[in-house]
Image (tube, rainbow, N blue to C red; front, side):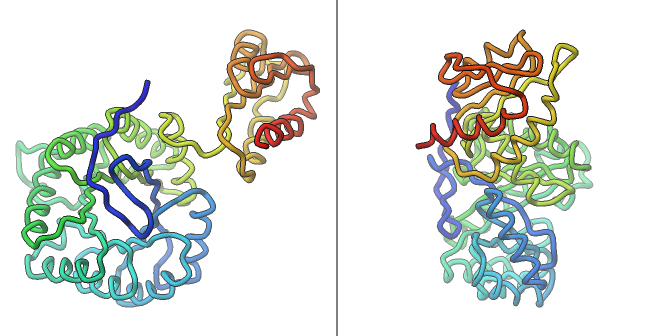
Length: 352
């Protein structure tokens, strides 16, 4: 199955192109104060190493906005200024080098203020993200109006105002904390405009639940071709957000980030410590630059040989030892203790 992407307008954030036929872009957010520039830069470097492509920073006050200049000068990634309540902070962040600005229609909505921000965006030639959240969308007290309808209505009204100022470098997000509301909101807005969509679920709860909720919502939308850039929002390290986003995109064959590992869940038939092997192997491989190939680590003779044959390189274990497969053919038996070293050597040879 090949996913047919909805064709959206192409918007550039720094050197990263979003929309059109471009790959789905991974984003995250710095989780320290922007005014602490050194800590922010360390986190940005970690995110870059993990595979993040665009990073957003909260701009809560003047000190945060002024720090943008130093962060921008040293950042490995394009920077998005996240603005709420005070439009003047957007103007400062733009002057200090922001690559994109996010405004929340729930708390910056006065026409005169929005117009000033748009003028500055035009002058700097950078885009705007219209970012709505279920927790701050207008009209939440209206009875009989669903959350998706509130989000879409608010987005369309804001888009109309922005377009009235002859500005169309826009990206849209409509994030709800409820998975079904999130899916419905993006489905509706995707049919009504051609601006690229930034996917995400907001306020997802604890990390494990957050990954599950985000995987369901983003996976459902991406399968329908909806979505041009994503963030997996977690109450956890931003690097974990990036790893989760990469896993979602890889599982749908929308992106490849190196070797893809297949392993069995283990059961009473497994006679080796496969969990320990898989965790150690994954950690080693994550630090290597290798081309995307399928690697299978299987723990028993039921599905093991079949999955190992289907992979580019694989091992099916019996008792203590395993059978190494390459390109669908059995090569030789290997010991459990040497498995990681042999697989990595085979992968490196395959890479050449």
